[in-house]
Length: 90
Image (cartoon, rainbow, N blue to C red; front, side, top):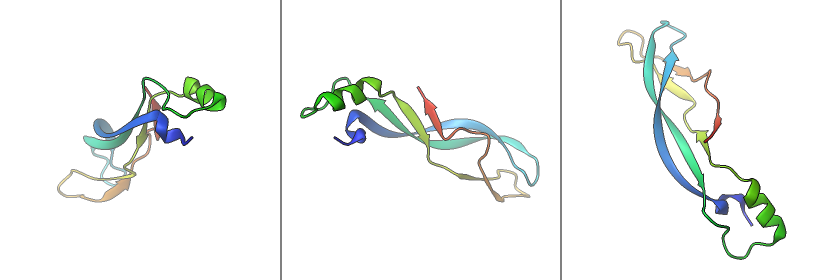
């Protein structure tokens, strides 16, 4: 059974304080995340190994954005998002 069958997926945005490396401006940016929430029960058709995997599974978020554009009107350069974890457990 595919691991994604254990989760309900949805997109969400969360604010993050990021620092532009070019102009050194600190601002709040909306960062996109993929939210995977664990289902209440195991989908039908699972065997013992699938039940063990489902018991260990946790809800988590995956970072979708890897770049942000600076909000400073003079800069407006895209920069890579660093300092944020790519996976966050809920």
